[in-house]
Image (cartoon, rainbow, N blue to C red; front, top):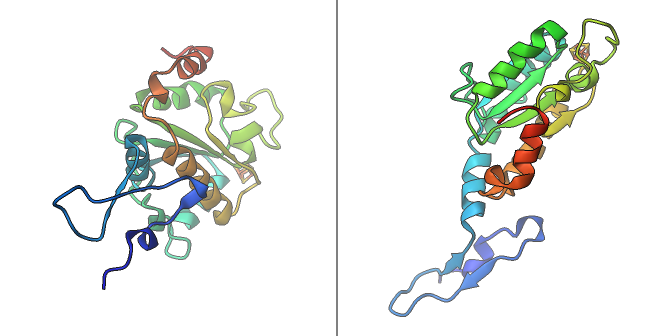
Length: 193
Ligand code: SF4
């Protein structure tokens, strides 16, 4: 006997799931309704294409995260891209010198919407121990950051935690967010049209 359809649905995050009766003339395990943004979010969050912008030691932790033991592929994010035009997650890992700032910004600008930014490690988040004239004191001075991963360096578990947080954001992002006033304000605060 077929199980009731409710048993096959995980109620993630306590969000209500709408189970509908089958339309007249149809039979089977059942039907459920959802929002377009939830379906789009589900697809996007499980098919992230990261662009690693690794400049120093945190990049080594990222290499470990991609290796067989930690295996970022489990999260659908194993397809690393080195063309900003193909990627949707910019992962900044390492010390960003002020001279490197315009390059990082250019890479961000070349990424198509929707795009997300993960700042990995103390250096990318805040300059880290390099409180000096030559080091950018946090990449959020030049581009918007979605999730910060603390640590010097963060362990691969920390990077994976950051990816999970990004996935959460992606899953619940409205399909209209990128055309909304708040997003435009955020972009214009960085001088981005
Ligand atoms: S946060 Fe620490 S480990 Fe990461 S790049 Fe900076 S100095 Fe290196």
